[in-house]
Image (cartoon, rainbow, N blue to C red; front, side, top):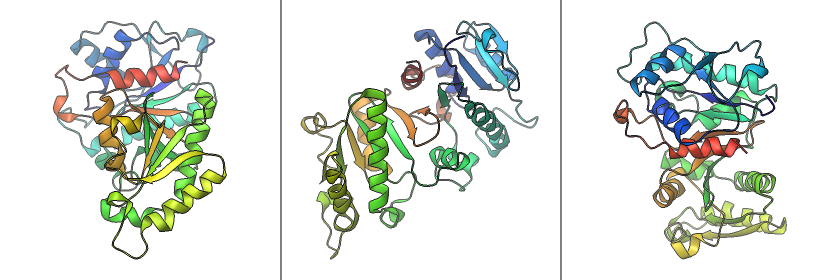
Length: 321
């Protein structure tokens, strides 16, 4: 085995993830082996349900024999679900199970013998329980990254990055700073140069409609414009602040590789409207590559065999280079 395996944490047990995983494996044959971390019992049950035929290879997390891992079988590190778990809805009963899966993945990733991590969708409400804003912040904390990380919704035509992630709107303004904008832009440039040998063209939105405010000193004047001026001095290809209501027009998006917005719903909805299921969520700044499909557990679709696997396929392809 000369290709570093891809680690996949199955995520929320009651979700569409295993359905889209099986569809992904059928549609795209990864050159690299995939190691799933999750319940062998659940995986076997779902394979039968969705009529997915594959040989299983149970491996020991403490002594992985890389010579016996290949892309012709599903390699599994088993993590038992709690005995009281019921497959009826998403609940906090899966919290310890998901925590164990992540702990195993983080331990393995420290060895530098793996290509990266893909995690299935997770219920933030039940898993994070208000301790973290999202899985991005959870993984940053668990790898001792304090501030220098970013959520990049990557798509080959246009990527987007929110400065703040899962915050209520009333808290966004207080969480912005010149430093955070500069940090995200620096991580994005580093990512594009490393992966694509390209200094990206970046647009930065304002926070307020039309980048204007009735207040004497707006967020644009306090944080955004000073950050842009600094980045231009550092030879970034950067424009802004630009109004969010027009930046996603077709003639405008062609000019940029990345649009940085001030909050989650300023940039994610238009990106998803433009590119549907092809974007993937990449966490920048971690000591390893972490990707997740750009959708949630989709509880209402569980078991219906109607979910689109494209985002997961794109995630696997990205790590399969």
